[in-house]
Length: 343
Image (cartoon, rainbow, N blue to C red; front, side, top):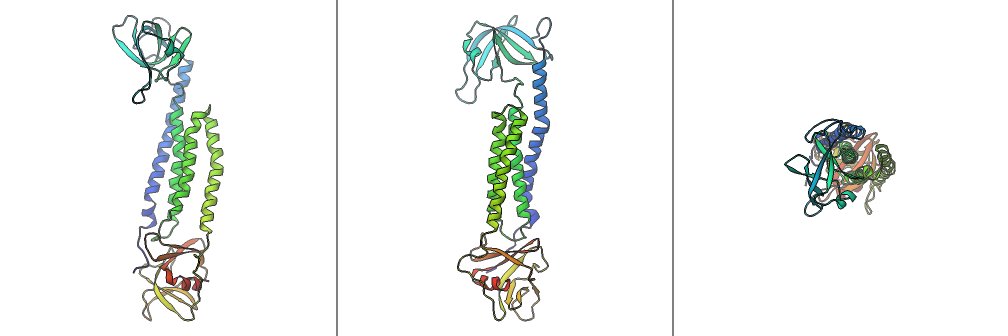
């Protein structure tokens, strides 16, 4: 049985989360940096536009507002199958063609109208933006009013999700080559990202301004991220060995299959034997006498012991050598000798 394991290198392991992180952040940047400002500018221009002087142009694309008079021919309530919006079929005065105009929702204007009633359809930049009947006015589905809310909500929701995959990539990149990628390095950031993504998405829908939604997201992000960091630290600080496995210091050298994995000189590929003895732990190129070996320095400190994911019978001793992470992979029955040699 092989105690070690190849696995993909850190660069290959983090490629997918890095790509997802960059993709989501690019989409969020396009929405927040380009689409939302454009939608806000269009709404400001629409609100400040005045009605055009002279005869309205039913098919015009002017910057001023054209109030085109006409008559309601039929009405269609919303709902039914699919996200169908309520609509009015109308005919402009002097025109021979009828057209549908879809409203944002059913309201007082829609409820009060009946076929044959007179209306004025407000056009701006070539599209029907509102319907007016007497003192009542209702925006259509093409109105630029609040057109920034949905892209702003999507953008704010994607930012924490993009950050989550960057967080995951960072955690995986710090793990030595060949070690299993722990699920909690994904589940904790993903949980934080989903909470922040939901707050970021629904914030613009329930607040009145851009700043209010942003402050809500930031206010929720602080405790959520703090809880995520605490959970990760707590997970790393679990007991260094499972119950029943106690360190044993061998009186003489003992050799058994195992590898040291990490960006350290003694984590060399091809050394598949561990040697535990009174002088400490070493990794050797073979079990026979005279085989090349590299000592594991006394500076290596045990962090915890866990089973190796996907390999029944193999266990991993997670250690730290300064700021570098080192993993010793061996069979469960050899763990007491490894822990004793590393004391």
